[in-house]
Image (cartoon, rainbow, N blue to C red; front, top):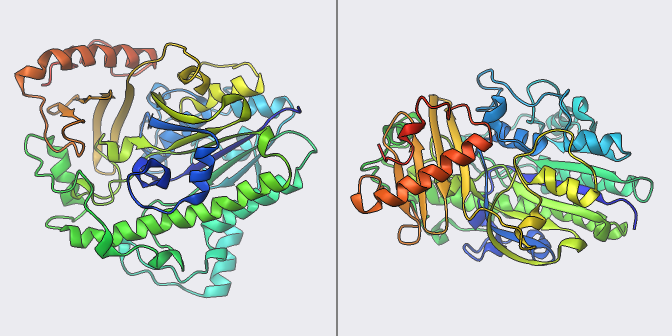
Length: 452
C-alpha cells in the first residue's frame, strides 16, 4: 500500500450531542454517521481549550495552547501562537513528500497564513465573496447572532464551496503523490444562516430545552451572570432560543451534506481506504443552554464536549468510551499512521492508545482564559461522574454529571465532596504541569482542589 493520505475535517462550534450518531438529538447527519459507523467514534472527546484560534493552534502544534501563550483568539487581543519555525506534523508531511492543501478559514497562527506552514491554498475566500456579491447583490441580514434564512443557494454557500474545493483537490491529486488536506469549515458557528432546504428542516416548536437551560446561577461565578448581561440576553425564554436552535441544527445538516462531496471524492478516486480521516470540532456552542450564546467564560459540556471520528483500516471500528483530548491527539495520530517521527514536543497521544490496551487517563482536562469582556482563568477536569472547575479568581465549580447533566447545581461548597475535589485537583495540577500551563508556578496552585 502507498503512503497514506491524511484528511482533517474541522467543523466550527459543533456540539457532541448535535451529531446524529450520538443518539441524543434527532439531527440529520447521514455523512458523519456513516463515517462514524465505519471508523472510531470517540464518545468522550474534549477540547483542551474551547475557543476558535487556540483550539486550531493545538491541532497544528500538538501542544496545549496555554503553553505557547495562545490564550484566546489572536485577532481579538494580540496574543502568542504557533511559530512557523517550529516543526509541526504538517511540515513533517510536507518535507517527506506529501502535497498539503488547506481549504477554509485559517485561524491557526498569528505569525503567518497557511502557506507559511507548508500548505497550498485551495479555497479563495475573497474570490468567493466577490462572486456572491456579483450574483446576489447586497444581502441584508437583520437578526444578528440569532440567525435567519440565507437567500444564497446551497451550492453557492461558503460551506459548500469549501468542501467542493477540497473534493477537487482530491480528484486532481489522485494517485500522483500522497497528500494531506485540512478542510476547515466555518459552520455551524453562529450566526446560523442555513440555506434551503436546510432552513426549514427543523421546527422551533419541536426543539426541546438543553439540560443546561433554566440556570439560576445560584452559587456560580459572577462572570456567568455578566455574560448574560454583556450579550443582552436577560429574560430570554426557551421560545426565544428555540428558533436559533432549529437553525443551528439546520446548519449542521447543511454542513454534513457539504462534507459528503469530500467523502464521495475519496471513494470515487479509490483513496478512501488509503486515507486517514479525522473529523472533529474546535469546540461546541451554548446555543441557549444556560441562557447563553457562544462559548466564553465557561467550561460546561456544551462547549468542551465535541464529536471526534477517526477512520483508517488499521484502526478498526467501534465506539471508544475512554476520555481523550481531540485536538492534542491529532499530531501523534498522524505520525503513528504515516510512520513519521515528531520533531517537536507533543501533549497528546495516538488514538490507537485508547483501543489497544495502553494505559490512558480516565479523565479529560481543559482550560479557558476568557476573551471579549476581559480575562478569566479557568482550569477543569472531568471524569465519568464528576467535573471540577478551578476558577482562579472566583469560586470553584463542582458538578455531579450523572445526576445533574445540565451542570445546574454547583456542589463546590458541599463538605461531602471535599475529598473528591481534592483528589481531582491533584490530578488536574499534575496534568497542567505536564502540559506547561503558566498558572502552575506555585503562587496559586495551592487553591486547586479546595473549592474556594
